[in-house]
Length: 271
Image (tube, rainbow, N blue to C red):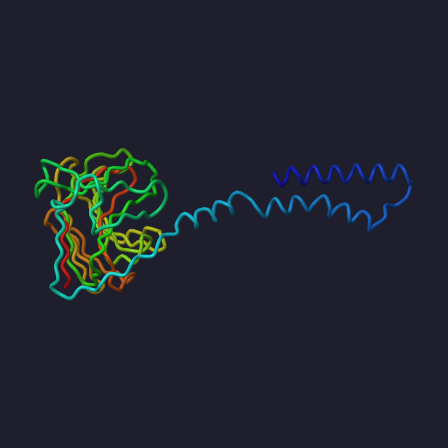
């Protein structure tokens, strides 16, 4: 577009020169010509400086902003929390959790619901939103405590999803844009460990595993210092080190895109 406008400007300048030369038969006044060139080029420079890419970057940064986390007390070694959701009202988010979102798209729809197949009867915590935005990660964050070294586990069932069919756990979470997440994916049949920094997700370890949709599986992670060990259905699949997040943070549950996923028996123990 700018190149096309440059051509139009040159054409208009040629026309001005020809017209002026014809009417005066002499040289155009240098100062007057400079003023005309400046006046014609000014809109082009203004347009080039405010293109869609710049506007898009500003928009993306605004969308990635998240609310700061309310501080939670650091838990001493040996302290345990268990969430089976059986005493929570159905069709609502559990009282000791809040929802959040990494990325774009609609917020998640986290509700307690009855499921006859639940490992602990009668309820599960379900993420039901089917927004297909790809870079979209709904979170359900537990508010009772912060943990540095920990053992964290949950049972999950991947119910549906065309873009993704994923289930994950977050730990050492600072806010919805900064945390570790380990997740399993029933469409890709893999198990991966990421750090998310300023909303950007980067994998640093993983393994291929069979993740059957519609069946219950267990995720487990142990994190001590910079050493992270991840288990899938009680088998060790990932052994990694990473120093991105060294301090204590909250724990919670995670899904991706249009994943409809059920969770039960979330357990966290401080080490």
